[in-house]
Image (cartoon, rainbow, N blue to C red; front, side):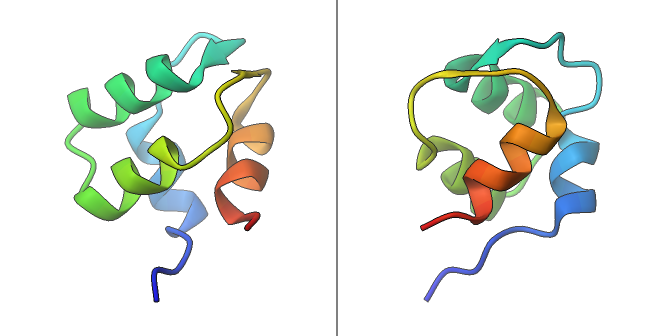
Length: 64
């Protein structure tokens, strides 16, 4: 039922992240920037690896 978060909203909540970043770093950054539960859950469901930039995060969030 869950749909991927809006990429613009996703990146808004990840502004200021220094890449490469781990999944845990991205989840923490999103929470610190006030992301809603859908965005946090989408980030938590990504594979646990290093992400080299916003595009890699967007791709990981939208893949199932």
